[in-house]
Length: 142
Image 1 (cartoon, rainbow, N blue to C red):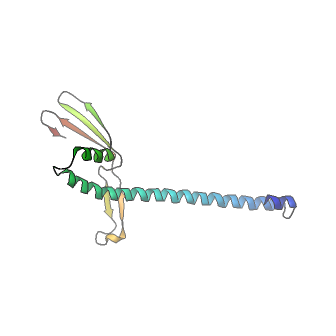
Image 2: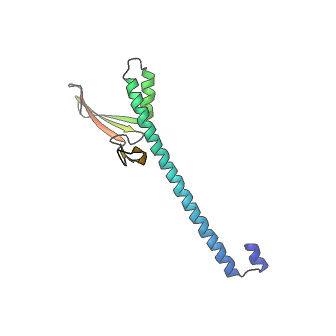
Image 3: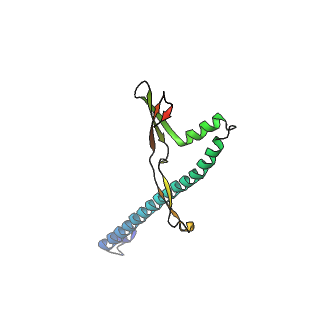
């Protein structure tokens, strides 16, 4: 375009208009690209969630078995739990705040049609943390 302008084959205003249109189109395509990348990222997160649900169910079943090794339990929990913050509220009670890597607490998979699951589903995110109170005398959680 600049060459055409320099050679005088098109007038300056016409060339600038063409360049502006091309730049506008490039920006529009760039925006579409970003939206597509975000959409793909969301799909990947959703797939991870579904994979997690299956793996979590399988792993919990395995962990209940007595032959499930401590190191395997630890590895699984490290993949699910970001951190645990413990507060001593008093001598008899502790407060545990469990922070998860993904929003597991209260999350749901809601089918668009319960009868025809091929119609897909919506993922309802839960929370990333759960607070528990442990009474040391009663050995109970609240």
